[in-house]
Each structure stands twice: as C-alpha cells, then as structure tokens.
Image (cartoon, rainbow, N blue to C red; front, side):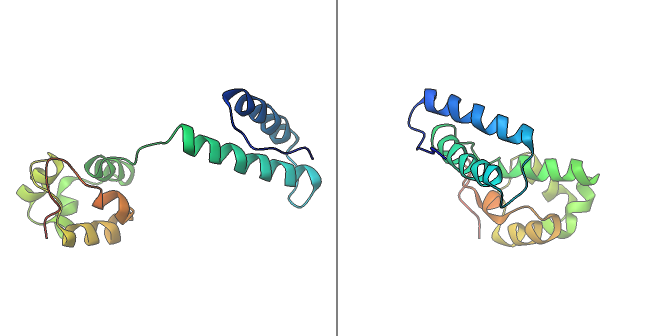
Amino acid sequence: MNVHPIHTEEDYRAALKVVSKLVDKDPARDTPDGDRLEIWGLLVEAYEARHYPIDPPDPIEAIKFRMDQQGLKPKDLEPMIGQLNRVYEVLAGKRPLTLAMIRRLHDGLGIPAEILIRNDDRFALAA
C-alpha cells in the first residue's frame, strides 16, 4: 500500500493527488481501494488540522447563522435569551451570554455548547 506520514507540503500535495484519484474511483468500504482512501483521508485530515486549523465561529455569529437557517426573528429567541431588548443587546454584542442562555440556546437551536461558551474578549462569561 506504500503509506507514509505527511511531513511536508510536497508530501501533502502528493497525498491529495492519491486521495483525488481514489475518490474518483468511488471504492466500496472494506475493499483495498476503500481502505487506502480511508487511511490517506485520515493522514490528510491530520495534516490539515495541524497546519491549517480553522477557528471556531464567534458565538453571536453562530446564533445569527442558525437564525438565518431556520428563518427565525429576534422575537423567536425570547424564550432562550429573555425580553426582546435583551435579545437585541446580545445580538449586537453589548451583553454577554449567561450560562442559562447558553444552555437554552444549545437546547433550542442545537448550537454546540463549546461554540456558545467560547471566550469573548469583550466580556467575561456571566453567571
């Protein structure tokens, strides 16, 4: 199978070519090509995570994104955040999320708590 770690950009580009060719074949799982694709995919994923990390989204941007996805208006967030003026303050970044808000937003909108808890330099996490 000739699999080896990805240490350099040159290794990375070569691995991407291998993965691309295997993806084009669309191999079934538990076949030699399927196994090769899985192994090379894991190597590429590990290299990218180490060399091209993606920062998690800002909590407020995550809320706005989910609102857009679900066609929600600020009023729809009242059960999770509080009165409408508080909703607007949170969405404008003028008020921090409290732990209770984070729990309700996680439950109500399905946003991962890790994203909502993310530390914001403007505020310390309110209790």
